[in-house]
Length: 349
Image (cartoon, rainbow, N blue to C red):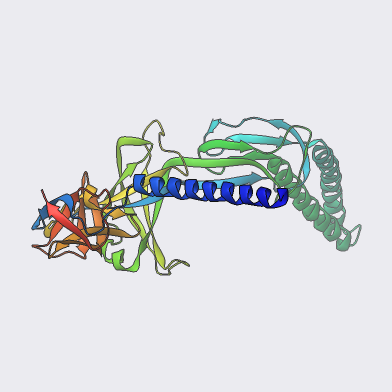
C-alpha cells in the first residue's frame, strides 16, 4: 500500500513539474520578439543620375634608391680601419675601409731591390756587350728579367691600392656589416651604400591600365608619409611582361628633396589626372553595403529592396563613381539599412 502511495506522489510531482515547465515555455515564447518579414521597412532613397566628373586615378607603389650596393673587398685581408659608420654621408671616391697592406709593402721593397740590381746588371752588360767582351744573350736575359720585375712591381702597387676600399658613388652608408680585426674576403659585404638623391618609383597596374602610361611622360607622385608632398617623375619603363597576378610594372625616375625626406621603401601614390571630364554615375559612399571587393547597393523595384552588385571605379571624398551595375534613373536606398534584406518590402520616407 505504501509503495502505491509513493508512486502516486511521484506521478503527481511529475505532472506538476510538467505543467510548470509548459507554462514557463509559453510565457517565454510570448516575450520573444518575432520579426515580421512581410512588414515594410522605412528607408530613404535617391534617384541615380549621371553627372560630369573629373576622372582621376591613383596607383600605390614604392620608392627605391637609385643606387644600392654592397661594398666588399677585391682581395682578402685583415680589416685595420673603418673610415665611416652607419649613417655616414660619403662622396664618390672617398675612402671607406682600410685592409692590412704591411706584407704587400714588404714584397714591394723586395722587388724594388731586385729591380735595382737588374738595372745595374743591365748597364754593366750593355758596356761589355758593346765591347764584345760577353755574348749579347746575357744582356737580353737581364733585360727580360727587368721587364718581368717591373710588371711584378706594378701588380703589387695595384694590390696595395685595392687595400683601401673607396666609395663607387656618392650616398649614405645604410649598414655596417663587419668590424676592425675581421677578415675581409672577395664577395663578402662589408658595408651597404645607398644613393637616395635620385629615386625609382614602381607601381604594378592591370593590362587595361597600361594605355594610361607612356615612356618619358611626366606624372605626379604623392608621398604617403608626407601627405602635402608631391614630386614629379618621368616614366622610364612600361612593363612588357606581367607577373603572377597579371600586373605590369610601371617605373618612374625622380629627384629626392634637398633634405632627402623620401626614404627607400616608403609608399606613395602615382596620380593620373589628365583624363579630362567625363559623364559618370556617382552615389554616396554610405549607400554601399558589403566590402570593397564585393560592393552592393539596394535598388528599389516595385516596392521592394533588391540587392544588386556594382563595380566601383574610384572614390572621391564621400562619393563613389560606379563603373557598372547601375543605370541612370535607378532608385537606390541611401539609409535605413537596419533589418533590411534582399527582397524586403519598403516604405520610402
